[in-house]
Image (tube, rainbow, N blue to C red):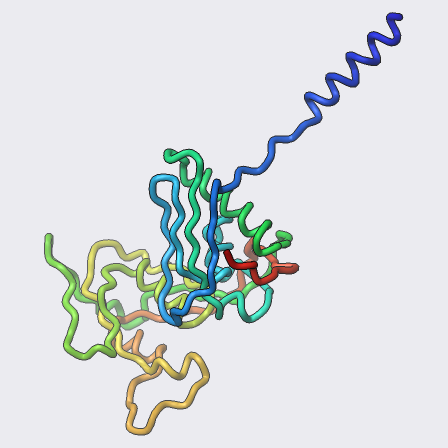
Length: 242
């Protein structure tokens, strides 16, 4: 009798302590292929997710990684944009809660499967050119100034922001190693076609990126290798719309 009672208690304990908490999910979620072909947005507010973006950016947000840390996957991962509206049961859900729910949505609706590893990646360090910095400092309370020429990059006020912009241009990680602090009116005019390997239109005369950085801002991109953690997409499917 004692043996039977012990066995029953063991099975009961196993069933209780062997259970794992289910992953948090959105109470409701609608996904539709977006008709928009430009721009993107993703925001959490009062337990809701509102997004118009591509799946690659959803992965970045859900797992807290940068664009260069998402490796692999089909081309539509960065070409197809989706309109997503999702709501949590708890209006006070934290950002961590919302990220966990977004992970569940990616697994359930996009059938995302991935693994993590580290890889040697080509990166750039944004450093001061030997000629010295040429960035123009802003006075206290002064805002940045944008010229009438819309082809000039403006609105950036420090090297860290510039490094983030250059990450998108070079499609490689760019780290601010200038050691420069403070606020500056950063203006940059360069050939936007060359980094993509595309020919410039007839009559288009802009300096190459490396020349523009050196001559206009007194900065340069120093290439190197770095070992970084990455998220490798093993498989993903287009979601069923609702």
